[in-house]
Length: 405
Image: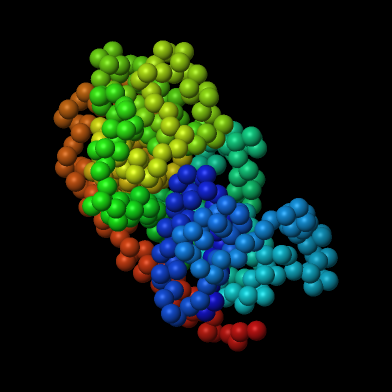
């Protein structure tokens, strides 16, 4: 079979680019010599990035003004019918047909799925919180994001109705999608953990890297580090930790380290820290190298995540791998993942303090060890590759039922 891979992630999309990169890697490995592939990339920077990573068979699917106009027209029902009558095919479907693609994988959520009217596809849904917090700016304000509520709804609904398979990260995410779109196909979902790239990179370079030196070069105070690697979206809820640290720092024992690109909310968080005279206790980094982030995982006291989005996350799994205790938003995670964290009450700014100073509860070495075992069992390379092979085998058995045109 000839497989298409649609790469629609941006370089500065944080965890998004990491998930897409690892999924691309696992998917191409699963093809072996049995199937060929073409990877369609919508962003020039991402295209150059993948080229440097020695990804082959790349096609730059440039979205210029003319294509944007065509895609817009294809979403209008009447015009779409006219185009269909005239035999005019949308630009994405046209190139897929030209390349004789049998099945295309959307390895990240993408609105372009709506233009796969004739090409079978596998889609990815990462989270459904646009439905639970639709009033947040990232789902309604283009200042924050182009992936607004309506785009997600249209894409997810289309995929739920038309996909061969949908990749989700947890059982709870599957349940969210089923409930939202009234899905009644038992075989639609493939549960596949997000595999972080950082542990894979660490295994390659750990013998030749001095992580203590790298950490010392950050010149952080000699205090217990609460680490939160997250881009500055409103839904990442950095403000909770600013207010929590204010209650913690009567003993001046902890510092917060934030690292992530500004997504419209960083200045607000910085200003709040300054108002509370805590700028020396909260350290902001826009960009850190992979080695620097690893050094923080290895030297932090705990990972703190107060996000309102996602049934799991990359930093959560990274913390499991590096055996770091985790303090996470309560009632967010899938039940399996929640077993290995300390859940915070986000309505109580003293919740973190209560956890940290309750020695019988907060830092449970047995819980940390079991989290590492869970990581190894769910983020195993062979398991993910096998998941893709099963999807391909299943699809191949289906298309053998009819003659290929």
